[in-house]
Image (cartoon, rainbow, N blue to C red; front, side):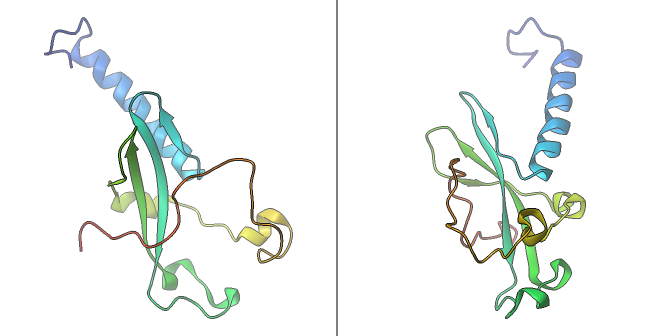
Length: 127
């Protein structure tokens, strides 16, 4: 950026991008979407092993989770695959029942906030 006519030096540009990166990872690990106005939205998706678990008691992250992806959807375009192997190592997985205080199969399943396209199979770009 600093070499393309910007008044900002390379150390300033690097500092801003480094701060952005650390904030982005923090927010994504909290399962939040991060929207950069005019650029796009970062979000996460999960990919489970084929077959899954028959009962929620049988599900474990180590056995059933195949991948955790960091995705980026450019503003006005379709999803693009952006993933990080390190991201899954830092993520903490929480049983939804512990968050809601009840059975995750009950309720309307709706929310006031639209999280967008986060479900379904997501191919691993490395495969």
